[in-house]
Amino acid sequence: MKKLFFLLLMGILMMPATEILAQTQTQTHTQELTKKQIRQIKRDQRRHARQVANQQAFNAAVEALKDNNWVLMANTLYGPRGNSIPVSDNTNFIQFKGNKVYLQLAFTGIAGPNGLGGITVEGTPSNISSQTDKHGNITYSFNVMGTAITAQVIINLSYGDNYAQATVYPMMNNNNLTFSGILVPTDQSSIFKSGFISY
Image 1 (cartoon, rainbow, N blue to C red):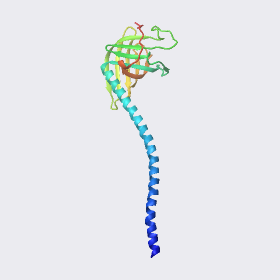
Image 2 (cartoon, rainbow, N blue to C red):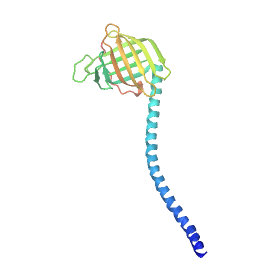
Image 3 (spheres, rainbow, N blue to C red):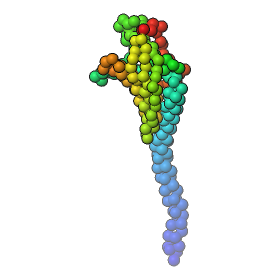
Image 4 (cartoon, rainbow, N blue to C red):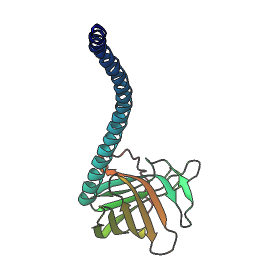
């Protein structure tokens, strides 16, 4: 009887020690999970911040298109055969401001009439239209006519950020040119426009 009482007493005394050991192991495991969760939470926060910033940039671009007051600052140009040319986005752009459209090309190390190694042309826009598909992507188009330019311009702006492509289709030939870069309101752009307009 004494042995049974002794064993029962030992079992009761050992139970808290076993629970403490189990709790310690659980806490260690929880701490490891928490570190992983913290890393995941930080990644999610960064991703969410990027999405919010991109969405704000998209919304600003949409408003700029509606106001006819925007600049597409190109960091890449694509020729008619799809060959790409990296360029400086503050000197290669399409600007729509009020009732004028400016298109500028500038290439380093090349002589050009605009003093920047390319051309700067000015025209008047017409037939402006905008369509939004079921995914929120925008197709914006207009014609532009000036002394040195007669063309149709079609812009594709994908939902969720302000990266856009604008293809210029000249009316007189098939030498279309695509400007690829960010589309921003004019007051948010950092373009340098040549004073030498090609007429």
